[in-house]
Structure formats: structure tokens, C-alpha cells
Image (cartoon, rainbow over all chains, first blue to last red; front, side):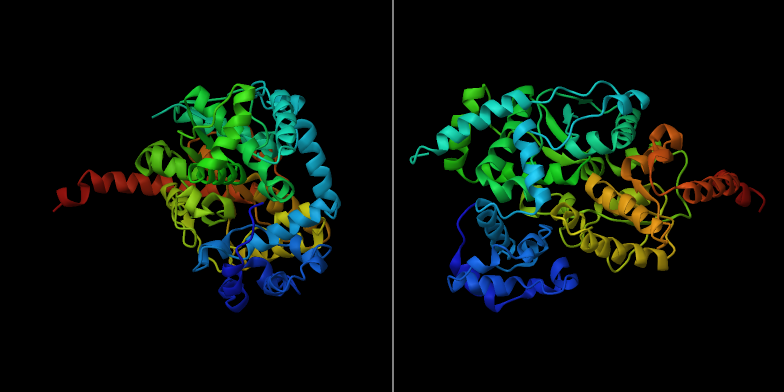
Length: 147
Length: 317
């Protein structure tokens, strides 16, 4: 995750133009990204890490498109999720999805019997092995402070 | 047209192989130069992987794009999430050389290099821009004239626009143009651009996911549309499967969810069962019956038009 731009977030905390287009702001009770942003600016973001709100951003990018700074509050919500995940505070399904991704490089595999029934050709080979090799190299590289 | 690889993504191949079927039938019907290439992984899904490890999100997408560089082909995906994620990373790496070098230092060790020289597109804008409306019209033998279809774009077909650059992100037109080219009315409705809300099912908030599905389905039920058209497996899951679950609990909507490729395939004259329409959880029977009936009526008006075009009326003066 890239670092947050606090100067832009100052504007976000006073603006709220995206509240009129954000699907979660319009439809989910208690979903209020500016409350999160105000706490982030006050150095009090910790309390949000266990809050369901930070996972309710649908990443539809409406806020980004309508934002006069081309920033949107999606960045803040993603940053909160990253911090929460680091502490192991993810919804169970996110954890299951992540485990599968790391293990197989995918979120599911082609189903051979269904393909046969539909007369579909054999699915192309997955890059799982190369992916796992790449993840290993990446994790080693990350331990190097100059990376 | 340049050859292109099809990027199926995880969801279509795992859960909805019939959507792969209709996509292949349509691509072959148009004689388009597509191929499957080995070695792809998950795109990967932004809302899952980027939240946990931004670096790995970038790297995995860059690896998929590097496979295109190696094969020298463009990419087309019938999944909005895959198209959007790959385009977003592609755009980020083109504007950040430091990050690109980092990525390549790792990719080089697995025999790949990210160049990002090829086009990455979603199937719908691809049909609009590359195949073109006139070519689409030429292939239509059973049009949808008289049918009222509500389009659900799916957020990631068009956003983020700085990466996808394929339509107006707040007032898109291309899917509408394609539906009209098939003869249907594209019904305009209040919640047209609302997110499907399927993401909430992936964070264990099923009731909220259903709330979002309801918002659209209720409006479309009131407008008495014949079907909803979309081209994203995640949105399809939300509106077909979750609608089915609500119907089981006694909440009736009756809105068939038709994939772009199924709609096009039907208009091209392919049989519904060959396209996999019998695999849907929400039955499309009423939609198909109305379409067959209108096409029967249409052949009469076509005869009238043929006579008009031949100058029949004028010749009698």
C-alpha cells in the first residue's frame, strides 16, 4: 500500500462530495468514511481496525472519479484494511481467499466434468508453479531494506 | 486485427463454465483471432490481494501482463474485475519507473519481463471499438426488437477510468450502443450505475449483499423489463444466485440475468441451450418465449419493409 497523502485527506475531511455517489454511504447505515479520515488525521486510526466499516468500501471507484483531487476516500479505507490484515483482523472469508491465492495462485480451478459436458476444450495450464517460485523470491527480496 | 489472448479469470472457469462456452461461440462466430495461453494465474483480485500485500498484487498482475509481452498478443477479458485490475497495474507501472524496475528484477528471475506493450480490454468495449457496431449489426439474424433490456455495466468495466480509458466513467454509452445494435431498447433507470454489491458477500455480510441486489431488482421489477444484461461473473453471481436465494424465501423478482455473450449469441441465431442458458438459476423461459414470438411477428413486418424498399408503393402511383 502506498502511503496516505495527509494534505489531500485534509480536504476530504471537509468535502464529502462523494457521499452523494458512494453506494455504501447511500445504503449502509453508519458507513461514514469522513469519521475515519478525521481520526486518521488526529492519529487515532487504531479503533477503526476492528470495525466492519473499513471492509464495506466496495472499491467501485465512484469516489475517485467524482473527486476534484482525483483521490477519493477509497485510499483511506484500503490503508485501514491493510493495517487490519497485518494484525490478522480480516473477515474469515478474506482469510480463506488469501490462503487459496497464496497456495494456488488462483481463487478456484476449472471443473473438468462440467467442461466436458459443455464440449469445452481442456483449460490452459495455470502458472501456479512459476507463481509460487516468484512469491518466494519476492518474500526474500522484501527482507532486504534496500528493495 | 491483432491476435489476442482471452483472460477467463478464476470465477468464470470455476463457477460458470457456460459463460466461457457462450463467449467462445460468439468469438468464433465473428472469426476473431483469439487464443488461450498457458501460465495465467488470478489477475489478482484487488479487493483481496491488494488489501493484504500491495507489492504482491502489482507483481502478480505484472507477471500475467509479461506473459502477453512474451507471446506478443493483446488481451481481452469477459470479466470486468480482471480487465480493471490488469489495466490498473499496467497504468501504475507505466507511470512509476522505480516500481517497474523492482517488479522486473523479480520477474527476470522467472524468465519474464514486464513491458506492458499490449492492449488490455474488457470484452464489451472491445466489441464496440474493435469489432464495431456495423459488423455486429451484420451478424444479427434474430434481433431483440420490442424487448426491454436493462443494462448493468459493472463498476470495473469502466472504472478507474484513468487506467481503462474506454468509456465515460459516470455516463457510459458503449454497452448501450451494443444492446441497441441488437434491436433491443436499453431501459434507462435510476439505479443503473449502482454497484452490484457482491463484494459484501465476500466479507461475510450476506444480508447487506442482498440489500444491494434488492435495490436494483425491485426497480427493474417495477419497470417490467424483460431481462438484465451484464458482462461480469461477480455481478452475475450477485443477481442470478442471490436473486434465486431471495426467491426461495418467497421474494419474487423474475428478472432473468443474461450475459452479453449469451444475448449476442441468441441474436446470431445460436440455440439457447447450446449457449448454456439452461444453466441459469433464474429461468429465462418467459424472456425467450417473448423473443421468439416477437421474431415471428417481425418476419411479417420485414415482408412489409421489403415491399416498401422495393418501391412497391411508389410504383402504384
